[in-house]
Image 1 (cartoon, rainbow, N blue to C red):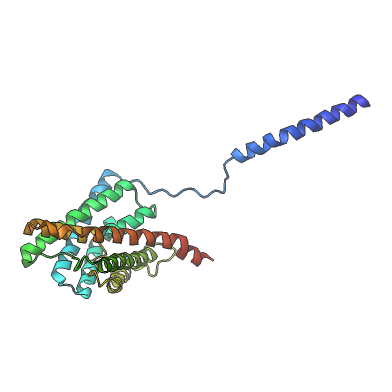
Image 2: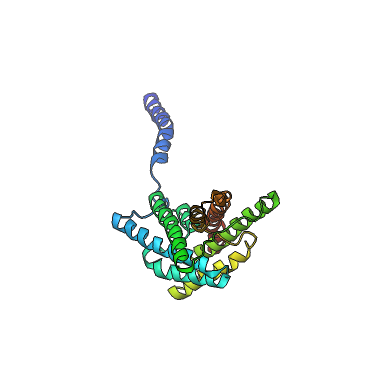
Length: 262
């Protein structure tokens, strides 16, 4: 009896010792219900070539429209509509480095694809400015009227906030969970209307909201007029829209979308 009792106690002791070991093994087992990390779909060389060609053309058309519009918000929105309509089936109709950056932050496109977008958009903006000069004889670009600290701060905030609202509207329309309409014509009109209203939030800086237009048009004007002072404040039109686009992506995915799912 004593021997049987001792064997039973030894078995219980072994079970107690083995329990932590079993627990460690369970921690190492992958959870089958874990949500997989989203990764952007890979692009082939042909896909990237198509993106480059059409994004260059679309951004060039939009750049031409900005110069030709003479600052008219309605005409600028109309040219954006035309540029997106032309390119949306092939590139998604970004025609704006800030929009592309927001989708990179959203894990929709890869860093390599983002570089292709940015290169095409900058080239398209410079090309559109050149074509506008050949046809219209006009050279123009966004500009900062004063380097006063209050004025510069207003320009930075206006460009960032205007881009934030514009890109947020785009995310709402293009994502399936929040899309307002499945009609392509109406969807593009929704985005063009978003640009119209977003420009009203950044009238202090002229409502650029597009780093390709801010940098590309200024590059062409500086080169054509041989006046590098035109590039003195290009960073406002580069970094403020990118920051606004980044915040729009964060806000949409972290606040807007979770609130709708409640």
